[in-house]
Image 1 (cartoon, each protein chain N blue to C red):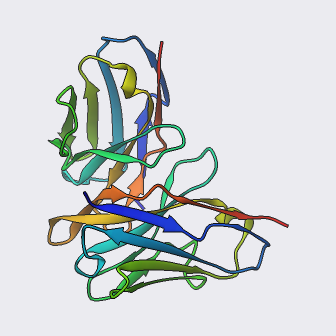
Image 2 (image 1 turned 90 degrees about the horizontal axis):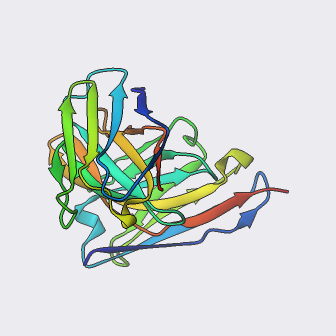
Length: 121
Length: 108
């Protein structure tokens, strides 16, 4: 069964940095579109970033210029480098596999359990 | 951005009840709509995609319908394990997908 396992969440001060990891098993991340989705405490779900199979990347306006998504095919692991963190970045971060429905449309079919990022002084 | 508005925001129902949640989009999303269930402290779980296609081992008591801007998720006979928060999501504008604000379902 396909599985995603996030790690790297921590308590960090405003302005600090953190790198989240997402290890995949039973499928290859290099041949899939992979996203990060976050959920602030008591709030709904917010898409953060995606990396395509060809390594094309996109970001939500709220994180563009501060976050960088990447992957290591050999380790079958995706990353989210988060710099200049703000209090509003506090959330559970989920790693997600995007499943193709049509040429330009993908839904999210496999989710990790999440890792918690807290930004506070 | 396409806004998704779910109603109701909170729902309390009894075992065996028929439950319906509505999701309205601010623009046409065709049938590029998914539904997720999230139990407290857990990750979201995909229930339905393409507005009406049941994912994998999701029980058949879950039904999705709709097209364009109005969608519904129906649970035909509520079971104890159906508690949690339900989210709709549009992927018409993939990769910039958006989610509804959620509907919290409580079992009486």
